[in-house]
Length: 82
Image (cartoon, rainbow, N blue to C red; front, top):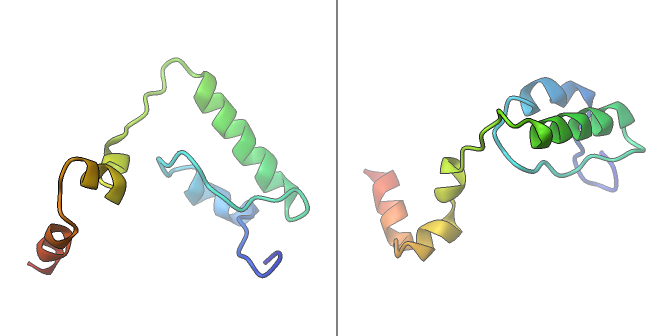
């Protein structure tokens, strides 16, 4: 914890680096700096790797894009309930 907020550390790196997300917040240099530099290195490697492809499907399922496509919020809840 730092400033009453959860912060990622070294023990989070194994599972976090397997995630497809673009961003992970809460890395601090003053709390396990190795975690900060590890994630920085991996994100930079990914950005410079011409063979890496970004899968945007999970982002298309977020509320903003779904609303832009004209889906109603009520439909999301109806689908989850059934």
